[in-house]
Amino acid sequence: MNRIARALAIAAVLLGTATAPAASRPAASRPAQPDVCRTEVRRIPTTERVVALTFNAAWDEGGIAATLATLRQRAAPATFFPTGQFAERHPAAVRAVAAAGHGLGSHSYSHPHFSTLTRLAMAREVWRADAAIRRAGHAEPLPLFRFPYSETTPQAIAEVNAFGFTDVEFTTDTKGYLGTARGMTVDKVVERALAALTPGEIVQMHVGNDVGDGGHVLDAEALPRIIDAVRARGYRIVGLGALIRLCPQGG
Image (cartoon, rainbow, N blue to C red; front, side, top):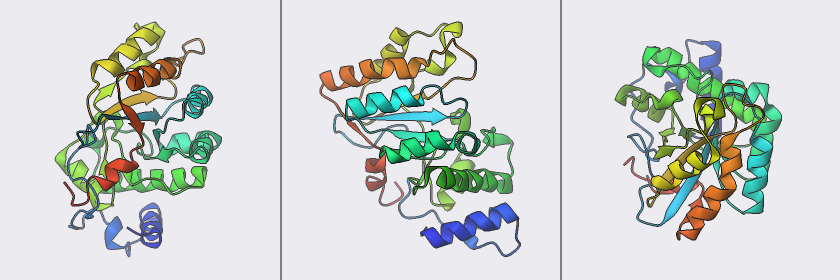
């Protein structure tokens, strides 16, 4: 979907106009875009020894500065999945991610359970998030969507595909967002990332947590060790732009 069509779709859904273009109509039976993956993606489809680092952003931005500093120091790319509400609350954080050259995907607008939503509500979640992330980041986001709670269904995936997005989930979640109060440690975060090491692994981390944790953001603290250990085992770290090129026929 080109930029003009996407902008029209965003406006139509947000305004609720009856003349919304086909790309924005939840009820439209429109085939998936040719450049999307039509099933959930939990690893990059490759045999190369590569790993993608991804970060969800739905709560606070406490780990953003440290995460970006580590990625810069180690020359490692990453992909960030903010919610639209996060982008509205923390536009400087989203802008910093884009300015550093990292990819921006979408994690919905308000982080709801998609299984409870109508098709129209799904569309609004997708397009409101897209608009908010664009405003905050001053950049073109990647056409990648990650469902809240990793709650995917064939119908929901088909909906986001119809809007031109690929659903990207993860091979492993480090669970760093649980924090020390719920039994997580930096060591456990690193162990979870490495235990799932495989060609095309997608690691899910978070830039903050949903409860106060004394200033600790375990994923940010563990990131230097994760990067160093992955590379020591002969893997390269890649951005998820590679995924787009590997799904040219909606595989």
